[in-house]
Length: 339
Image (cartoon, rainbow, N blue to C red; front, side, top):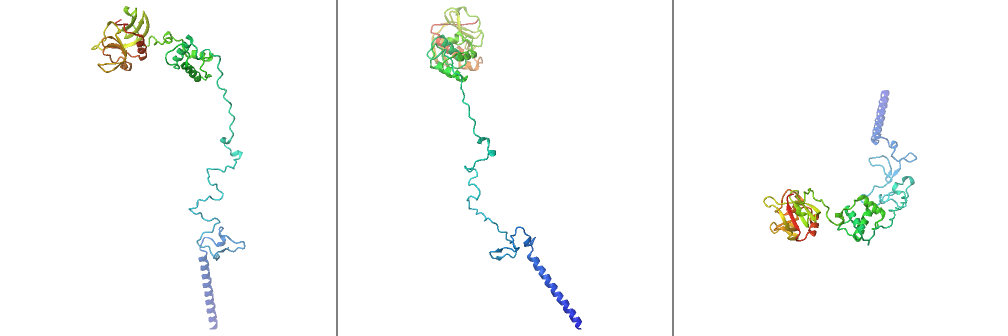
């Protein structure tokens, strides 16, 4: 009986010890429910003696869910003060910093010294200069006019207009700009131009400016001062004692308003005339038969022979008729004929 009682007590004691061990293991598992034990966490600060450091609330017994403390405080969203170790403005480097030689850009390298431009060669002795007069000056102006450096009528006088024309010509070609003509300037001008014609030297429009081929002169056109108008070739020639000074294209009236034929004289002139019937401009009008006149026609200039006059002899070359107007005087002959 006593033996059975002793055995029962031992079994009861073992059961109690086993229960206590199981409860201790459960408590330990609950305490370390993370992935690693506190002493296995590399981020967990451990004292050199192997114990967890103390916290403000006392010794740290477990990690819990709080993040590990850091050495830097969290930034204030409203704080714009510069951070330690950073410049106030990243676009403005410290002016005291000198870049290393390896870090220098081409822009940092000192510029090479520029060689001074020697400029154009000096001018030679003047062959023609301001104040000169004579046929050489007239030819100079005519040549400059051929390449649009001189405007206006050519003369024998080397004045301010000629000086400026020469200066412009010299500057364009890189010569010394003096306004005086030296041998180099004259040679270059001759290379670019031709020998001026008599018409160019005397400020006359070049004979043959018109596009039509003139027919034979009427015998009545060979003496005196004559406006010789050829209906066959549609040309007007200004003839002085048989010498043709100018030729221009002409447009005539239609079949309903034909240009009269015969021998006439210039009865009157009107430089800025406007038609009293059609209210159209008739510049440089030279009337020879009633209301019919030789005059400039903007319509003829614009449309050519796709049209007709109301009986006048239309001219389309404005410069030519302007020059002719200044040559003709009242009383000069006008011959309108078929060649």
